[in-house]
Image (tube, rainbow over all chains, first blue to last red):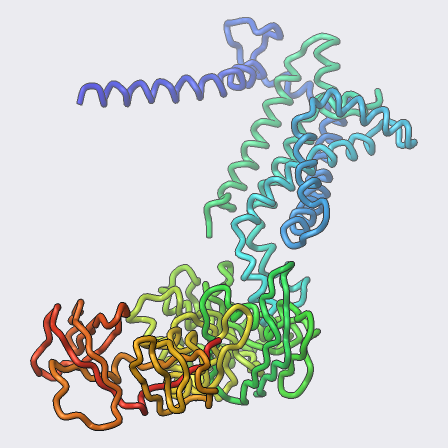
Amino acid sequence: MATTRFLEWLGRIYIGLLLAFLYLPIIIMALMSFNVSPFYQLPFDWTTEWYASLWQNDQLIAATWNSIEIAVITTIISSVLGSAASLALFRYEFRGKKFLQALLFPPIAIPWLITGTAMLIFFFGVGIGRGLFAILLGHVALALPYVIVVVSARLHTFAPELEEAARSLGANQWQVTRRVTLPWIMPGVIAGGLFAFAVSFDQFVVSYFLATPGQTTLPVEIYAAIRKGFTPEINAVSTIIIVVSMALMLLTARFFKFGGEK
Amino acid sequence: MAGVQVSNVSRSFGAHKALDDVSIDFADGGFYALLGPSGSGKTTLLRQIAGFDFPDSGRIAIGGESVERVPVEKRRIGMVFQNYALFPNMSVADNVAFGLSVRGEAKAVIATEVQRALDLVQLGKLGGRRPHQLSGGQRQRVALARAIVTKPRVLLLDEPLGALDKALRVDMQIELKRIQREIGITTIFVTHDQEEALTMSDRIGILRDGGLVQEGPPEEIYDRPRSEFAATFLGDANIFRGDATGNGIRLADGTAIAAGSGPTLVAGAKASCAVRPERIQIAMDAGATDGDANMLKGQVSKRIFAGNNSTYFVDRAGQTLKVIVQNTGADRLTEGQDVVLRWSPASTVLIAAS
């Protein structure tokens, strides 16, 4: 009995440490965004001046909008293309299918530094060059394998007889996909889309290679700002992003029960 | 409604011949069972008729119209799948409405037809449920309602009762037969369960290794099988092997067995005789002989009592014969007892060696 209680407590302490490890840095950062001292000095004096000055920092705000825009477009494009690719891999047998599926995984494992260099060279070679469009293309390429892997995993739980049943009832290919297959894989598409959004929004390395001085994304801008000299504005913008993205995640999780629901 | 004609259909998957020159005529409005062990090609044949797969050669016609290259969505068939294949994201009513809805029927028409179909399968009040809230038998009924609501030309059933427990299966057999009679639709039913095939269908086709072994009404196949496979796959049979004589066969030890039906065979050719276990009388002694009855002596090796009947296993010249005796309250035989088996030539079918 005593050992059970002891183990129970040990488990609680473990969970507590894990959560502290995950969230403590974020919480401190969020607190410091409300602190008067720009050098993390105590005592803690409450202020919102960093948030106010954030609104004056046009460069940071422009970069934020760029990041949001690119992440949203990346999410849409890679979700649609990735889901279509997963469906094709699921439905059809063709030569080299196994090879093609195996090719999906290396991009996830290849260091972004290498992918970024390769993209930079390639985009210059084909005349696309650098800039927001190049960043968007790069992000879509990075996000696609994630979407395909997640949607394919969901498709594995799909009974192919459902498509056959729909066809036997007179439904054409499009009706089958829209009314039977897509509703089933939707949680996978949403999860894949969230991955794509995260891959794009968090992306620093590839964006850094493809950004031009005037047109850049938030992570690249934050990095540049830190090099120039740290200001708590960075804490402020990071806090806003964390609050918004956690709210989005919780909302999505509330409406879509990932994986589990039949 | 329409009949289905399958003519000389063959289909291979790689080196494996799944269907080998199969021809069957499914009459309009009939209830037809395709019976065979797994791998016999019965499901492949059903999928050819449905249009999920196309034959390499041969012709398939529904209502006289050639369809062997028409895809499933244009064949106007109804199909019930082994695992029901109900759409999990839709309510029962939406499942049933699916076929009408993809066709673009008006909402009011769909509502009426769906209700009628659900009433027919006695699920009129469950339209709002989701498939996962239903029992196995109820899902089966929904799948059936969904398949017939579009008024298909033919109804195809792929082992539809396989997933149900025994008691429910018997209920559903009766129910399925009732519904089929009520709407008079040509029905083709794939099963590996011989009892199901016997009790439900007007005609049975027995398949083996991609070929049609025998085809006809259940009584005909049961009473006059044309092969050892047909005799043993549909029901139980005692098989004797020997050389053909004028009216039966002669066993290796010289015993003659007379057969009342079967093909005319050249004397001396390899042949067998089949006798159903329930046609054999078993007794402790020969008793009054009636001249032309077949008679064998043996020894009871085992008895299995099943309440309404008993099955005796009788050893005779290295062969174990099966005899089923109704429980009439008469003296029961014990294991180890010497017995005399007797049955009439009319109960014996001569079969040519294959």
